[in-house]
Image (cartoon, rainbow over all chains, first blue to last red; front, side):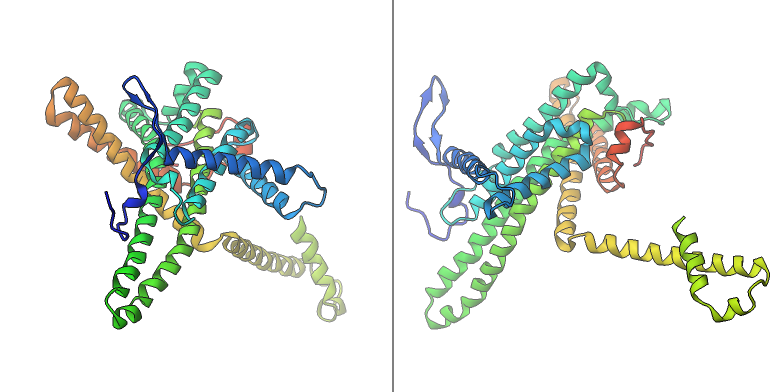
Length: 252
Length: 137
């Protein structure tokens, strides 16, 4: 199907690159999968090659790696304490994956992995799964006390516990929807304004002059989108740390 | 500790007035010292507040906070409604589960927002002492 070049949704389309069909399931290698692989590969390669020199005085690349390490480590230590540091590899992986995937989305013609709800939801489920799994593994059934705030009178306890459980269940939803919605909305807005430039400049001289305005807007939005890309990765990682804190220290 | 030292030091630095009448009454010295202490405390508070405000990377933090709170509230409501709807379609009690769990979802949304705006617990202290945390915060 030929597509309109200004169609803002077209960029989110999933295309099969290598069709794989196993039984009734479609395991095709899509453009989304390709960019996930690229994200992981680029991140790994970057981290590996920048730290290979292990300079006492870090080179530029090594500084970036060290800064992101320190940043994530401080974030995790602030939120979950020293006991939470065993989750550092997990949090760092998630942070770098989301960050690089978001920034990849800013490259023209690249696919934005995190603009699909299922990807971010899978990440959020992974986080919550780790929280629940580690909580039960470490504290056993006592971990369920995370749902029982102390100092609540007995007669409203059922209500409070229900609210706490619903609140806990809403975490993966808010975590994933926030990241997905930000990336989706940002890219659509960007595309819509860029599309204005195209369609207005088709209207002749006046249109070309007028198209300067959406062009300026597109430039401003691009800067904003870079901010949002980094910010949402940060927020995702911070919330991951906070949720992990519940697994490590379940007592409110 | 620090303010006492600074207080007496500043008192010593100002020679003419008090030193000329060196052994007046201790009460006057005490009054001066407490006044100075109060002034110092106020100054320290102000600089601390300023430092805190400056350390925050302005818009970035605010934007993140706003988006976070909004989505957390909505997520609570949506999840509550979904649970209610699920219970209804299993148990066949059509509107009631939805109604009840929508309200609980609102509660959960408010709880989410409260949790994220309440001042952070100190994690290092948290690890050591079993903290008693009241519901609201």
